[in-house]
Length: 90
Image 1 (cartoon, rainbow, N blue to C red):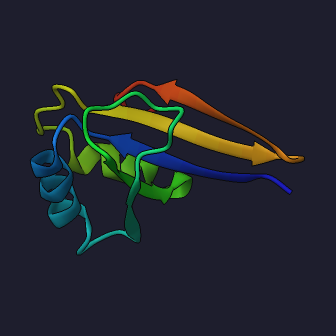
Image 2: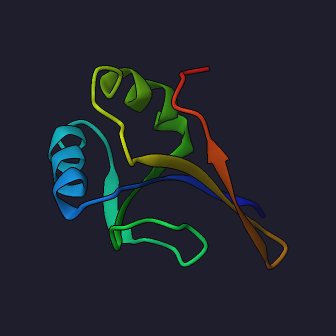
């Protein structure tokens, strides 16, 4: 069984809290510790369901994304990988 979700990492705690406040009223997001595999200045990241990706990207379209990265986490058969994604909605 495959487990997959999206992660947004930040360069500051201020950015993490700003994005959390913007998305929390509309989406099931979770503030998590940034995974070790992701290099980020901030120890906090947002986790959300992959099915919400397109809508979240639309909501964040006008946000300044300097220092912010988007990743996809995939775990299957006791192996896990984190893939960097682009910000464009697809």
